Length: 102
Image (cartoon, rainbow, N blue to C red; front, side, top):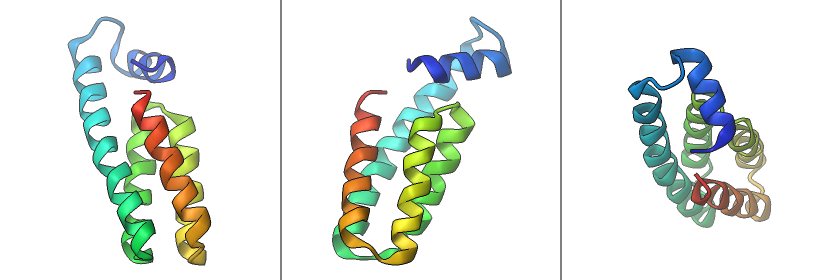
């Protein structure tokens, strides 16, 4: 478990609580899907979908205490709004890298 997520979730729910592992597991699964969706939307230039995916990824990351991934998702939303394909593809790839470390 990513250290920042463990610290955040244990602060919210208590150290050693089974719910911490459960929430983190759901977070990882969700983010894997969001990263793949972001890559596909960026490649297709589907800015509306990319913005929605990045928005969801940001919320997921913040709810798990993963500020690093949330920051990338925030930047990804900006790239989607500007329809900046190169930046969107780079940020989508970065999000996927971060998710792989979860």
